[in-house]
Length: 336
Image (tube, rainbow, N blue to C red; front, side, top):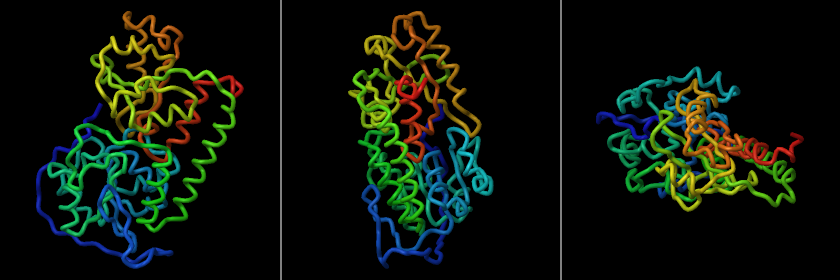
């Protein structure tokens, strides 16, 4: 799986960018708190660079895809409705862009889905970007200190679906697309309400593990507590078996998976703009063929399912991820 830290050269640049406010504009001087950073909300950005899949799709979903000047690190194919605007922006598919390459695109806002973008070794800390006139937004699940330090792994923060709604709403205000944000949140809530209705009265909650095994072999990595995976599992009528292990992609041994005995295993595929759910097949096959796992209920009963990394990162796909998982866990409630 691709590492989520940007190893980039340091360069010095001075870039300023501003543009007319979109309608309706927040009051002059309005700011949104984002991980302890006051992000101006009175003058929407004109040129946006987005890093990591969830951030890229969020900008598209909020109706600002036509303002993207560059994107990086798609984990899976972009949603079809965003393809046209995505194709217009510079994309860095194979190698991490250098800070110089990104600054050459002249963004006035950098939106990132994971912390690794905002480090001195990456695109610069948020304070450094601000000093040269560039705003920044970090997915709030990742909230480290302002300068990007203090987080050793991909996620250690608490998240919830309500937190995802707030993220969408707040970034919508920054982008000047509050109406689009409200519509997106409404659609997600409707999807979740329909799923909740279908699951009404469910008493049996299958035990679910979401995991990966980079390269198809070697150590297992699980999505644990304090990650968006937990509320997705719970809203889908399941029980997160690794809730006590904090963070995202935490390492475990095979013995631990055997001890937890999940009823269902979900494997997210990653990483690349052409990697769909089938990208998880190698890991799934390896789990099925591992004799030490033969008595794990999910393996024994052939309840190992592929998904995408994009669905399990905090963002606009999360409600659909709940609906899809609920159908896997409780097929009888969906006419299957």
